[in-house]
Image 1 (cartoon, rainbow, N blue to C red):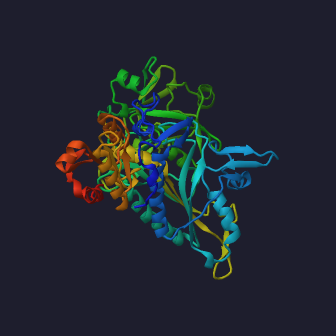
Image 2: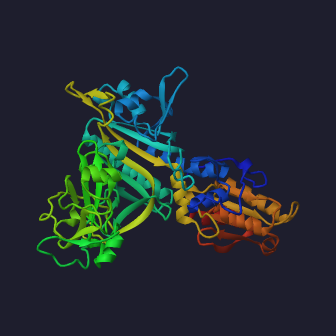
Image 3: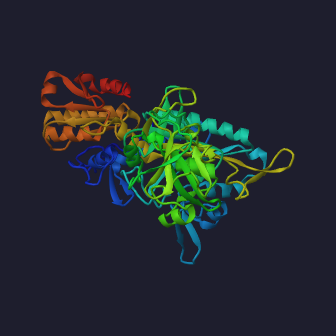
Length: 573
């Protein structure tokens, strides 16, 4: 386990650990509340966070685990600048990303503050790699990232500045990329296991990174911004890209020989129409008028009990789309907001696959206060078919098992970039025959603060944080009960020193505070093991030990307390 040695600064009487009794008023996520209360982090501004000494110790421990595993995988550590010329981002087409900080220096030269480092590392590789003999390579760094986040939230989970581990693989061909990708999967699996997280590796969208494929590492917890689809058959995917067989809608109306109009005055939502006509939401067609740059206006239709998936829709369209404005619904779609539908549509219609084969459906009639019932796709309108819905709990995965949905924190991601960056930045090499070929790349990220927050979210209880052993700021906290000059403080000091000599990083609470205050702070900070030294225990020849996770208590013999505590600590998760 990575060690962080600072023995002179681990006595609470002189340690900077400003704990609070109450959480910040705006704190929603559990990790936000507890990290602030425990004195581990403080906010400087919106999306800007300072790690205080104990919080930084946990951050550095996570960094140490990651470094060990990447070095073991053959990666080489380096450091790239955060401030970068805008030109390389312009060449890859990513200069237009809204979240990218852009600035001009005093001479008017354009720069960016990097939110990731694909452009910079590829620029260097383009100038240093010449031959197939120079490949493969894996390079990595720990570096600050800047992101013009529009809505910072949840403490250190969504911020404007953060430290990330990013590594990059460079290979001769796709087969080489696959080997580098698998090597990172093995390293990442070990990293998240060692950090003590409950995690899933899920299929993911490539997003702004581009490339041939991606996976995300997700830590399930209620504060998670992402939703993952899982099944007992091993299926795991981000809901953004998950596919599944939907449940059949219950209570569909009888099919009609032809669609017929029905009055629905003022009923503009799925819930209102469902209630007004006495049909289940799954019997309705939910129509979305959208506008694209390339295809113009398009109508997208999903079942009324399903959600439109914007990521899948963009994939089906081959481009991004935006919702039509109210005036555009009338001008471009010849319809009325709240009553739009695919029958007689004046624009192309894309229907979700879950609608295929259904009969007796209800859809907007494109006339105010009117819907159509008995609608059948294929008879009443001929759509383009695509999977554009989000999977739902209870759907069936490709292997036939039931899908469940879990909120999760994304703690890492891996991307098969292919030649997405090497081609525009001209990172090429000469193969064995002397032919010039583009380098094949992979990109692999880990958010250190996100691991820290996920560890808090997954292990905390009503009293405070309960750290996994590997990422706790300290291994053991020794609590001395008594006043200066009393034997209990001397015994606690001796125990603290013996633990340090045994290689355990201990924290000594030697403050002149009440036992209740010391215990409350110890449980809030959440070190894996607490040892309490007091007058009664000394008289009995004992030291009280409490395992933080589960709060199990036991006594250790005073003479062998350090050795017994080390053995107990090593057994902890």
